Image (cartoon, rainbow, N blue to C red; front, side):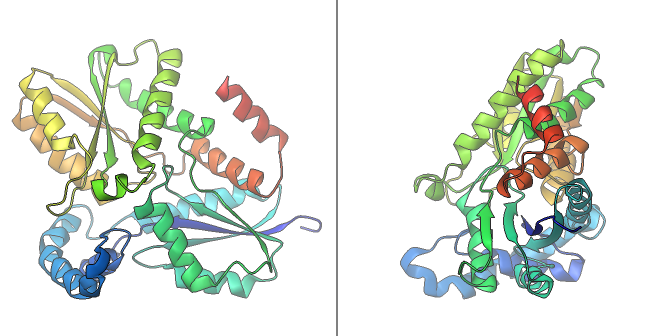
Length: 344
């Protein structure tokens, strides 16, 4: 390892309950976050409102987790990404990678303590595993990191990767995941490709949150790459949003409304692409693969498929490796060549 940069890498994710008993405290942490539910001058009511919402929602939400294995798989799947990324980076740097979950363990404070024990470091890279920047995900995670790790005081050079929604290797990872599912359709060009992103309150969009534009760009780039590489790429694609909470106005159209509309138009085949999710969790495993699937059957859609998340696929890990290496100023030839060839 002599001569290699010793780099701390923080992988940020939202997290999820690791047992049914953890559902209510997980929801309490979620709804306490002012970046999730901005209350403005009513912020003093945040804790009682969060307790009320989490108490009321915990039973139905726990029921959903019970149907997908009694826990969220996000910790295990993110750990797989972390291990694969460390292996991919080891030829170039000495990586000390930790996971910082926003709302459940291992939380940011735990990740910060691990990195403190690993000091001294030559550099630190903050890498949110949210391809698309949003106040509710990326910014919230980074603000929590600053709170628990302390200010950026110059002891260690720190670089933040704020988004990677248009990274060529990420685009290829999504496109090839779609391509693997298209093979299950007799005539994939005729199916309806439905991109589903996690929703966002319009109050954040109106404050300038770039998330919708990032999502739209990813969808466009994936479809452009898909049409070039797959002769049977679907002729029709749509973008919708899911996971709305509460009565406030959120991004539209909704996944449920989109499925209903397509079913009433006589659409029979559909592939749903969870575009803003890089691992499986309740939004994909239950909201799409159980609830949306049942809704599709109800409105006459015969064939319903869901694209698996990019997870720890080689292309996605290559994208993360490239992001980290560029952040520390290393242009590794194999990485640079792959990025250039996939972008062309």
